[in-house]
Length: 387
Image (cartoon, one colour):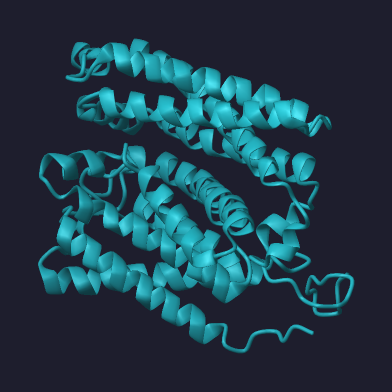
């Protein structure tokens, strides 16, 4: 039921917090495995569409150096990487088919065994393809360059994220049989006011740290306004980056955290696992590649782990995903429109640019997150009391 303050509660009137295991009902953990495959399958569909657009961009670009970079052979083992990709493909395919059977009601031993086997095939394939693909820096740099040249390709890349979100929504509604609102917040409606407040706070903190901190450290943002490219990329960034950010928060801080807490019964362990996963999801970013080449990969990627864990804490503070989504969206749009850095995964012609400094950037990320968490805590101290 819902009280007059818009607070979700169970039949006894007790409020169920966002990560309360009881809020997910009595759900078989296999439901979460099945849901995982629908998310991955939907993401694959988005990747296929992006791949088609990429081929079109390569043909239209017509630059021999670009084509050579994208088709360059790596120093890895192509055969094992190919086996890994094949395993991953069939693992997801079998998982989706089994998940559909599971969803339709046949939740017997056979579907459980197939789901476990599919999950094993998928993760083994992912591990093989990732480990043996070798150096992909040339390919990643070429992709980033192409997206920087073609705004429509940049938009198509960002649209792969809502594709994954559709799979997550399907799993939550059809497999778990829960209202979408309960995946976004523990309240009866999404609190847009809180999200807007968190967005503004994040932009304010980022502006302060970028310009004041940059002036103090000798890495002040350099003006680079390019009117021929800025406006279209800014429009795409302000429109699609919030959707991309929301997708990552709903899937990782929402769906995955809920599933792990449901199975493990410990939110802190779940937070550590999903923060590590969030970090791993960004290992293909250009800054990760350059960090690996310079021997500073751990320092570079630590910022992603801290961000992921801080987002989990925001969900605890807010009892919903509103602030986590807003902070993530504000961070990404700030980089995409205002102050970006050299070698960023976002190939946008922002208004200013700073140098990438792995150690300083990691320290800055921690300070920024602490400032945002502190301000969110202060502005949310007067929380609605739950009955």
